[in-house]
Image (cartoon, rainbow, N blue to C red; front, side, top):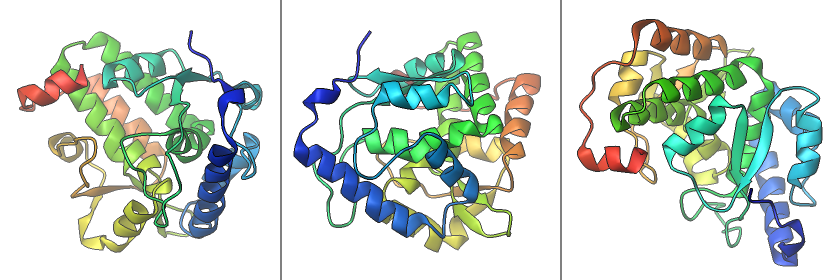
Length: 251
């Protein structure tokens, strides 16, 4: 099993993490809801050092049955979903090469997006349950088209979703938005692109890594995640035409 090689992180990489964490935390303080910050604090994520997975898992096990596992390179959607089914949270161990002035992620995924952008939400039971049940559905429906649909749902919500907070304000939820300044700013300004949660509409909206979303789906509460996955389990996956090359990528 691949392990995080913590001693190999350079001083520059530690500085990059510090810059990303510090600047994003400051920018996000008013636009990400309290449960996210509760997760950050519970996992003891800090600005001044890259998280050590073994220590993060010590804190994670105090609140959930999930485990943070290191991966050397981004996994295919089916591989990610299969790990979620087993309550494994795969996170890439490499960090973006440098903190650009606009804090943009160059490429598809990095440690900051996985561990800072998404992992804190897993302490919310509805989020963890949603991820695990999507993974279980992927094990039941193994064809590439089904994988693509499940991955669409995950990415439109866990990647680029928005969340209405306790005060009624629309806040950032998806890891792509939380970890990347330009994408976050665009999402919050694009009110015309905010759509209510509806399973059919979400699954009909294509998703491709690296492309900017045309629609941002707004969760009214975490219970929307439970409702969506229950609907999938009850009604099954709908038939949606998926280009062959996207099916290849999903598998």
